[in-house]
Length: 392
Image (cartoon, rainbow, N blue to C red; front, side):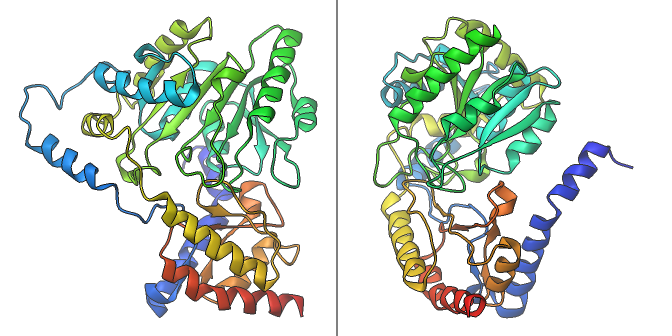
């Protein structure tokens, strides 16, 4: 027998597993090149050229102890390099003491939750949202609550305020957003900071703002604004998975707002959490690698071209969709109420999409356009046939 909590998690995610199984079956029957897979947000671009140069140099170094344990928060020189970039992005005096290297953004979020949450505490997240947040909350016996966003997928501050209560410990945002691609502007973030300041005073305890930002470097029409100047009790979790196409290397960081009075205690506590959760430390080679790549990124214009091609094609076919400012996802409205059923219709055209219900965004579906230009181009007739079939 397995733990009931794990059994429940399996059941909640079973439809996603079934979708991937169906996709694997289609690829086996038709050939992968004949299946238009928009299901998984797995970067298809290679890392930047400098990635390979730095990796080759690291691989030839034979410095004693270089592959051994280091401080649980990460190599000091790596944290310093990361702090320099975060300071520029956040327009804040971030130092190495405010940075902890982590096993991706997921490892960072789990370390933050382990540090801040008691059993029964609540995490409030705008919906739709990245589905793994549910499981991360459950890891730490917390309760994940949701608030709706606006029709444009912007933060609905009134809805958030209605959901904040004495048990709320964390408000978790994701910008640029998965699955919507929405980037929250500085005015919205500032208003959110004012709301959390008010509510923290009202309930007599800090409500932390945690910003999950693995897509920060993948933005097209806007600059992703800084979070730190808008609220002092703020924390950022970041991953290099998307901007450097290093998803499999599991490397990221936590950044603590240097203006937060309890920053040193928080850093020490999260360092302990990284260790006791079993991560111990972020991978040594990946840390040293990203330290040399602070000014590098994949070709964002490639994703921009895919976004524009897919968006324009869907609009021309009759779909309703908001054009995203960042990440590499579209989140169109389903032309029928049942988004799961419509994703089945798309499968008839050998198109793999994810129902919006899995992201608490029913009536939509997600398309990950981190794929080849050819995949996007060749899929468009199928999208058109699918909507014509269900709308008559």
